[in-house]
Image 1: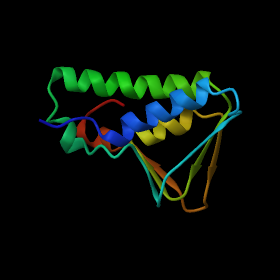
Image 2: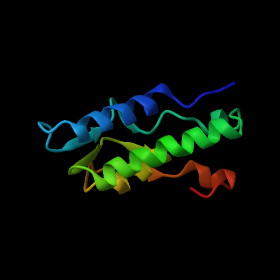
Image 3: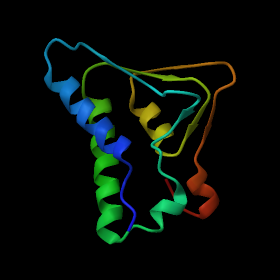
Image 4: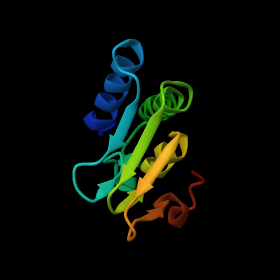
Length: 114
């Protein structure tokens, strides 16, 4: 059975740490490379059972909550932003992109309302 990506769980853990650490005054969220995404493929979601989908939703929602309600956050996009990555950019206080960046919600092509 598929699980939610470790990078998504690790992102939540890192944001929790940043929000609790008084020495950290803000967060810059970016990608290593040119794809700003959660690492979750739509095909992987179909492999999740009900609890797996709920775990994915809870994790993504808590990341959004940490970004939206926490310390000042900047999202730096160096290329494409996909799916939940687009949602995370919307939750940040500021967004910085390169000229050729684009944002896409692939879920829409599968009749999933993001």
